[in-house]
Length: 118
Image 1 (cartoon, rainbow, N blue to C red):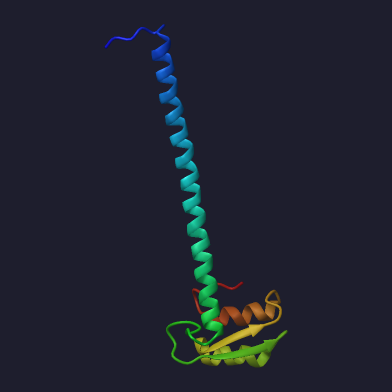
Image 2 (tube, rainbow, N blue to C red):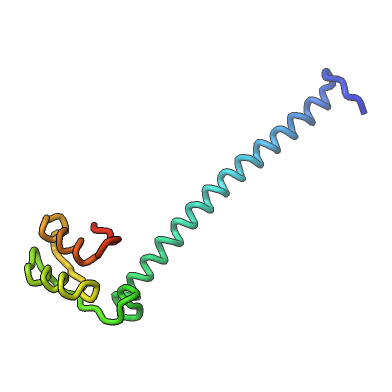
């Protein structure tokens, strides 16, 4: 059927179609943002649950090494650094201030080549 460009019914119909398309685009955008936020929330929740399981002793601290010793080094500790150098990944050093150069050196020695030092 041939519609005239001056036909008010055709113009109203085209306007409704355009409005529906715009509404669909807006809803799809909000749904996409909601899905991204849902994924971020789920991953944060999984990380928290893992931390809780590790703290509760229901999950191993790290994989790969059967036995680990958590060594509380306080502010600085030469003994902890020596233990890390001798025993490698079997020692997990924990310090109060991670920004000190000696602590960073100890953590780099503990991590080997691919460790991330906070």
